Image (cartoon, rainbow over all chains, first blue to last red):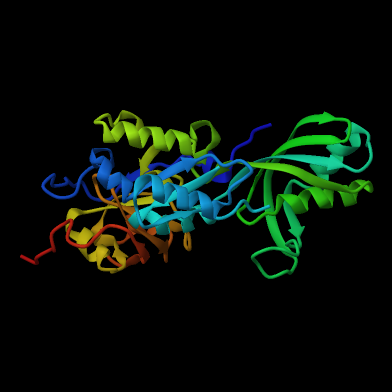
Length: 78
Length: 247
C-alpha cells in the first residue's frame, strides 16, 4: 500500500516569472545561520512517547536551551 | 513525535497543526474476529471520507464532522490486537476510529497505544530525543556545533510541504511590514490554488511570511499586476532587507 500524505504526492514545479538576482549584502541562507540564531528561531523534530505532557516537554526544551519561548504543535490528537 | 518551535519561530506550529498526520496505533478488539472481516470492514468503511463525532474530552465542538483518511494499512493482526498505520487529515481522532471500527465489527474495540509518525514535513525517521538535544547543547557549549545543527533545524524546514512564492529583494521589507503580495514582486512560484496557505520566501530561501492565496497561480503568468497573496503571519524581522526606494 502506498502510504503518502497528499502533499508528499505532489511534485512541485517551479515557474520563473522574472529572472532576478539576490544581493548577498542582506539576509542569509538558512543554513548559514549561527547556532545562536537557530536557538531563537528554529524547530526541533522531537520524539515523544508516553509520560510527560507536550507542555512539560516544551518547558524542558526551554530550560535546556535557556530560552523564554517554545511552542509545540499540539497534543497528540487522540 | 512532537515538533517544537523555538523563540520567534513559535507561531510556525499553527501550520503544522493544519498539516496531514500519520500515526501508528494499536487497537484491542473486545472479541476475536475473522481477519478477512477486519480487513474488508476497514477497507470499505474507514478509508476516504469518514464522519466522526469528536470524543467527549476534546478541544473542539462535539458535532459530527467529515475527515479524510488518506490510507490505513494493517501492519499486524495477532488475536485481538490489531496494529495499523493511518495517514489522515489534521484533526482526525484515532481513538474514535478504533471505537468506530469496533462498532462496525460488532465486537467493540479500543485504542491501546498511539504514536505519531508524521506531522506535515516532520517524519519519525529523523526525530531526536530530549537527551540528543541536551548532549548537543553541551557539545556546542564546548565548541562543537555539528550535533546541535542536526537537532535544531531552520524554521524553513516546517514549511517545506507548502507551495512557495519567491519574491524580489526589493519587496521583502514591505512584506515584513505586513503588506500583501502582488504580481510585480514575484520572481518564482510553485503551483497553488485559491485559499491555499503559501510560504513566501526570499531568493535566498529564507521564510518571510505565510499568506493565503486570493487567486490561482495560473494568473501570475497571464497578468502583470494584481494581488495574489493576502499576507497572514510574518516571521522575518523588519529591516533585514532594505526599504525599496522608488528611483
